[in-house]
Length: 372
Image 1 (tube, rainbow, N blue to C red):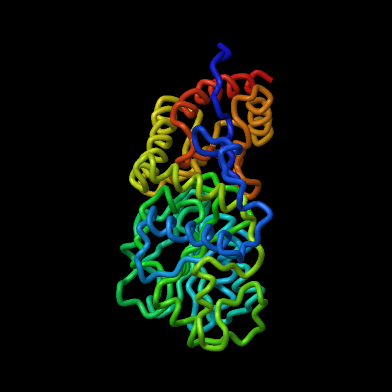
Image 2 (cartoon, rainbow, N blue to C red):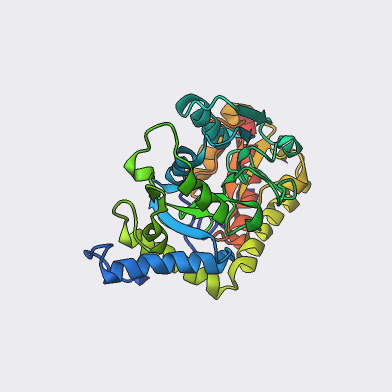
């Protein structure tokens, strides 16, 4: 039978993601609007975002955190263009976004000493093949493949190269072993549901040393520069930004950070996401026609939950459209480069009760498209 109860918030996009429970745009402060980001007020608000980010995530005190342009993409490109090339590079990818970084390394930066380790959607490459004297580039969570890195045990503490980690769909929802990571990037619109446009870059002391002692052989655009000569531009990590930021987006992020602290910080955020995944796991275990794209539970993503169905690609499209038309689930189709199926964002801002309410709709929509 057709369900009668719908999710209170049917927003299941993997980015921009659902806003936090109880969110109201009207609750954001407006005194910063129309003010310069370089004013004492503007800089104080940006600095607060950096300080609160470090506090919620437990980032080591000697790591730098900066707000940079162009979302996670800009942050990760900034890191690659300024620090890669000093050593050979090992890359690991298993879905489209990780593959994009490999493309940039090989075709844009044209780094000759690059090794590529690839796995199909739903699987992980063999990280034991990483050469710890090389720089290592990887995503922590494959947003379009539903597969995450289970831990950082494969990264040695005495590594010689730097680790570059795109963590945009994992940070705030998964434990990040900071001592294993030298360059970490993410964006506001993911796990905490902040507004898009800006990225965050986190640098270990080893990454800072690379920045201040290595000069790439290629020109570096101004928007990527984090040094002047051999000196780190410390102001980037103290509330100043390379270009003009959206101050309302920053207030939105501060609101999300405050909510995160109010519910118990990082442990509570992780639990909310894992509980959402558990709801899907229970449903999949009792329905033979739906499957996780990840082939092993130990590296199944708890944020970007990717599912395959016993349907044709056209039937999957009809199912997604049907769910949207019923206002039961928005933006839940698999990424265009991934195998046909569903992708539900299960980050911390999504309520488990909404996951539980959408599951009967999946069963109904599946049966509807099979009738045609």
